[in-house]
Image 1 (spheres, helix red, strand yellow):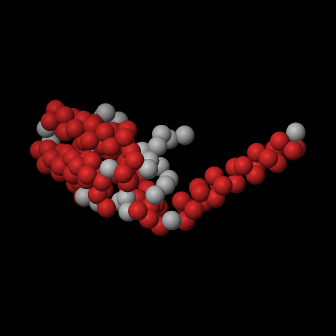
Image 2: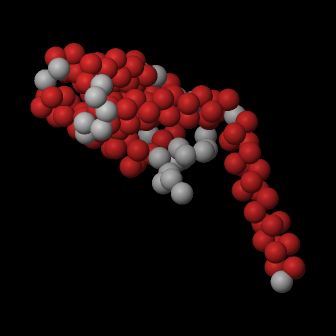
Image 3: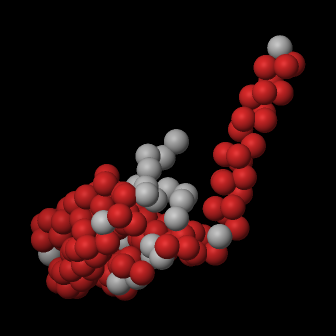
Length: 146
């Protein structure tokens, strides 16, 4: 039993080293921080849209913050940032990634304009368009969360 655990531990060391390297890589940490900020904006707006918090007057602020952050997506995947949650395919398809980033920028910018109107029906449709833009890229280029 101890021998098996020793072998298992020895085999897992390279994986732990990669995970540790990813945590130390500032490019990966930066990408993660930007994506987490965007995820938090979406979560906050989701709470507003679901009427779980009464902060409809803050929707526009969240939407603008999301749109501004989305402009960074295209630059979040330099060669030096391979690994972490990004699948290797993202570095093999730069044109598709650029198109997906552009789609996210356009969807979030349009949503920021819609959020400024205060029209709940339009806001819900715009929010779905943002979610769809994010989902398309995540499904193709992001490793599943554990």
